[in-house]
Image (tube, rainbow, N blue to C red; front, side, top):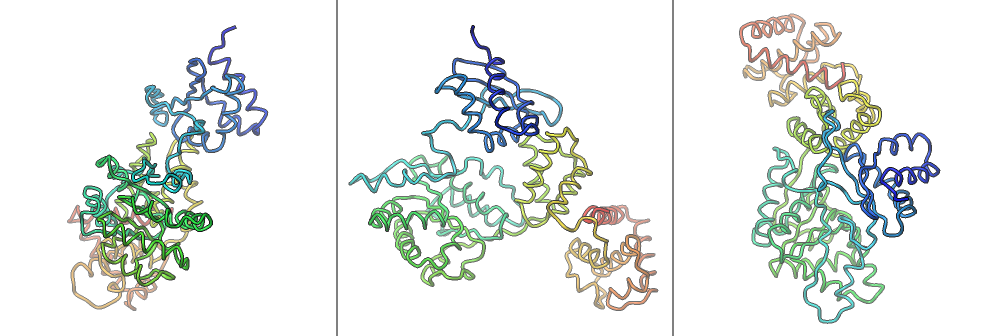
Length: 476
């Protein structure tokens, strides 16, 4: 009897059901639908990209085993990812969007460094140029690296380098900043842009930890010279997390010679770090000096608007419709780390997909409690002062001082108005937090703000917006 896609998948499910807990089976396998069988290739339909990625990360071996048991050793699984599932449109993607399962044992996996590839020049005498996998994540592009004041210098410098690698004053380009601000994304984006523009350029991304491990292997194999010769052939070298070279004297010595040769030959060097070169500890002074030859560009924590743009873009790519008030709520609470934003996004998608819940404020509150500790804390006068001072771009301590500068006076009066409205503090207690002012000053300030709101619609909108920020930030 000729098998059809339903028969094959039903047989696979019987195998899978024996190997996973009932809840996991219900969550991750019951929603799957078989759609097509072509010889030894079975195509299954999954609700969205998040669902597909979860299967590939957690159940790829089980899927491989079951499909090959049914279709033989050449059995292969393809995914059909539904588009718009989050929005209820239930439209399936075109066949070109089908994703192959990770069952091609001999193909390099992007982003995973294959040590065997690096050995080619070591064992083949006289080879001058080789084809290598650049180890660049194709998902990290300039197009999806959201620009803001926090990263504009680094992004623009990265684009300049990508357009003319080795031909700008930004060599080396050192990208530094705290964890989760996009250093690795930007480094990969530069590499992808170079690869797209210059087919003849050899680009290589490697982490400092991997680089060190390769050196250890080269020393064991008495092949340090071959290792150095190979790296000196690279046109664009991207070394990630150089702070992990700290204390590794032999690795630093070898990298020093590679750096010099690449730089002298006009090759581009891109480095990332969690701190500026001058603050790197355990790194040789001669290396620190060379890191300063080019441009050091920092990535700072994104402002609210940039965070909203980043999260909105990511949710759009994933096909999730997120209301603007939910977007604002999340971004008010996740302030310093883009990875945390991504974590919230994944949690929201999981909740929405698996338990069929709408993405709303209540769901966002539940998810975000796993990421921040400020939820449900009491609104304080100090918090109001910080937020208003940030809005008016004045130091918060200026709200406590004597001054007649109009923008500071308005910021102080507005802070008092909001403190009276949103806290349980007495007028006297509020006045004390503004440099020891008395209750009559608070009364006058509140009246002045109310008068301005009655006559100035723009100012009234400003007050409403700030009040909304305070309430959303602390979940009141």
